[in-house]
Image 1 (tube, rainbow, N blue to C red):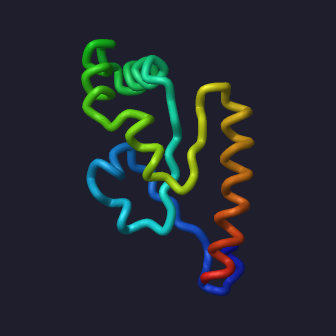
Image 2 (tube, helix red, strand yellow):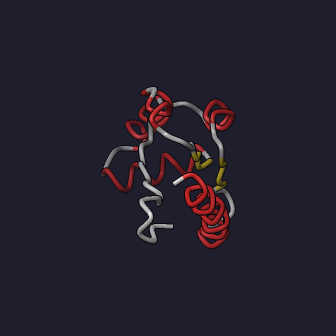
Length: 103
């Protein structure tokens, strides 16, 4: 995509996209499933939060099981970084071809 024809792909990363109701602004919604424990660890480290504060924030968001049915694409982050990258690249090839067809 993006070959001068006005098509292409725009990506919006938003942890609470579905909770905020922004999914109606998107042609596709992708959800990345992350085990809750891992999400808490990452948030705590990234934002310098206590584990308790990170847990409260994660718990206030929709669960994987609640978000996944709203997604066009579900990526699993449960196996490791390389496997996650492979899933994203495969799914992105599909979205690029769909954008070229509609753009």
